[in-house]
Each structure stands twice: as C-alpha cells, then as structure tokens.
Length: 480
Image: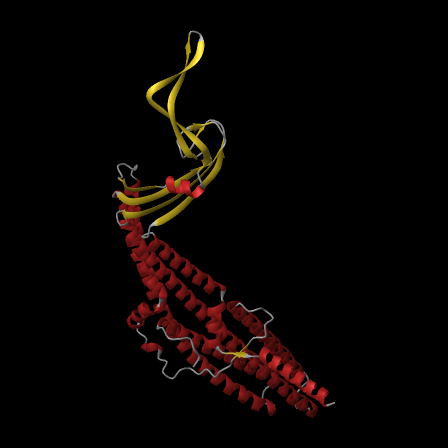
C-alpha cells in the first residue's frame, strides 16, 4: 500500500512538473535570445558570414606554394618506347611513373595581396549583414511581443465590458419588474451584450494570431504552448519626444547600425577591386620544382658480363668458317634479371628547377575593360554607401516624427477616455432613476468602449515607436 501511495505521489509530481514546464512564461529578453539562436533567417546570415571567412582563408592560402604528386601505372602493347630505356620494344611492358612537383608565385602584379585585402573587407561586410539581420529579427520579435500584450489587454477590456453589460441587464430586469421602464430597454441591453461578446471573440482571435506570428519568428511549432510575461509597462517618465534631435540620433546611429558598417566595408572591397584588375597589366613570375622517377618491367640487368673475342662467320672456299677480329671483344650478359622496383626508382630519379615568366602583350582589351568595370563598381559602392546613410537619416527623421505624433495621440486618447468614462458613469446614474433610456446608456457605453480601445492601441503604438528610437540609439530591447 505504501509503495502504491509513493508511486501515485511521484506520478502526480511528474505530471505537475510537465504541466508547469509546458506553460512556462517567456519574457521579451528570452524571446529575443531564442530567436537569435533559432531563427532560420539569422542562421542563414551566420552561414554566409562563415562562407566569407572561408573565402578569406582561401585568398590567404594563395600565398603558399602548391604541391602535387602524380602516379601513373599501366601496360604497353605493340611497338612502343620503353619509358626507362627510351628504346623501342614490341613486347608487352608494364610501367609505373611517380612524380612530385611544387610551384609558388613570386610576382603577380599584387593580385594575391589585394585579393586578400578584398576578401577581408567582404568578410567584415557579411558579418555586419548578419548582425543587421539579428537586429531586424529582434525588432520584429519585440513588435510581435507588444502586439500580443495589446491584444490580451483588449481581451480583458472586452470581457470586463461583457460583465458590466450583464450587470446592467440585471438592473434593467429589476426596473422592468418594478414597471419603471418598458421591456424594449431589456432588448437593447441584450443586443449590447451580444455586441460585447462578439468584440471579445474578435479580440481572442487576434491574440491567437499574434501568438502565431511570434512563434513563426521563434521557429516554434504552432501547437507549442507559449505564454509570454505580462509586465506592467508604464510610459517612461523620461520620455520626451520633443527633445529628440535628428542630428544627435543620426550621429549615434552611424556607430550602432550594422548596415552602415556593411556599406563602408563594401566601399573598401570595391576599392581593392581596382588594383586587382590592373594586376593583369603586369607580368607574372613563378618558380617550379619537379621530382620524378620511372619503373618498367622491361628494364633488366645481368648478374655477370663475359668478355670474349669478337668472332665473325665467313665463307672460305665455299666452307663456313669463323674469323677472330684482332683487338675487338664482345660482352655477353649472363643471368639477365629484372631490376627491382625501388632500385629502378633510385636509378631513374630526376630533378628539375625552373622559373616561368608570363608577359601580357595583347589581351583584346579585356584588362582595360576590367579596370573600367572595377572603377564603376567602386563608384556604385560609394553611391550605395550614400544611399544607405540617407535612408538611415530618413528613417530616423520618420521615427522621431512618429514618436511625437504617437505621444500626442496617446495624450488625446487618455483625455477622450476620461471624458467618455465620466459621461458613461453619469448616464448610469441617470438610467437607474429613469432619467434616460437604454439607448442613451448603450450609446455612452459604446463611446467609452471605443475610447478605451483607442487609448490601449495608442499606448502600445507609442511604446513601440519609443523602442524603434532605442534601436537606433543602440539600446538593448527591453520592457524595463
């Protein structure tokens, strides 16, 4: 019995821990960090940065010598040349050749030097692009996060309005029972309840959609039980939209925005393309070293060579005779055997060292056109750099104007909500004494509800516009 109780308790604790884990609350900082680690767009940008780093390493490796080994083996048939003896042979011969060659560039008009520098600038530009991608995704996550908070607050307001209208229905029913108001007032209140319930359903749907947008940015499955933290987000006391100056924010953003650095790096990369193109005007000098050896099955060596007098066959008086040639001797190999493999390689081992010089004389104008194209590329990179800076200035100017407008809109929405709330509360009091009908009451309530919704939207719009300016100022994304 005790064992069963312990098992049941353990199972219950396990289920509670699983439920708690499934409903873990995510803060904005955690959402941003998770997106930076898992978003596919960010991963792709990081992969591109790694590719650029490999390209830089490859450009630097061009300064080192290149070494290659060659091995050839085969069988020769028919009337061919023996590769070891350079003599003609009609027998089938097996052969094998091995070689090792190395070459290094001594001078190439600065091609390698400037290629390395260009690859370095390209790597920096790609890394800056990756950083800008992280910033953009982080800003999108913050926008989606605030959108969820906005929609959830609208759900709470809608449910609160439904409860309030239901209370009005209860009061209306009592007044109808007392005979102070007609039955039509009840119908008006019931229709208002239906409208409030419909608004609540729409708000709940908006919450689901906003959660789906956040999950897509985080690369989470749609059925993942994600719940975000709901901190109190007051408007910062030091928020002074009128105090933002374009020049100050712009100068700060020039040092914080990665896309500005990327444009600057691409200008430097395009600058290096000019001497790279001009390097084709100059001669190139290289040094090469070659080691080689050969083996052949036809290469044989006698164990002993006999020296005998040279004898020629002659015919004397019609008879075959032999004639020894004085002073001449003939060498006769004895016990001829194939030379071992490594002995042949050692005997046939050859080395060579050489210098190669390539001098460009006429290239159909291709080098001149490449230089002109590089100059135009440099000019285009400068124009793109200026365009990027101008776009940043325009975006900051728009952001400042937007935050000032959002501040005024939020202030106006607060005043409207205060007045419509007072009007609605006054209508409630007058309705209870029969001074106004249900139509006047629901009209005042609708005006108050619209003002409340506008105030909530204006609040989060103002907060997000402030976060955009923080983004340009290089501040971390946080709701604190």
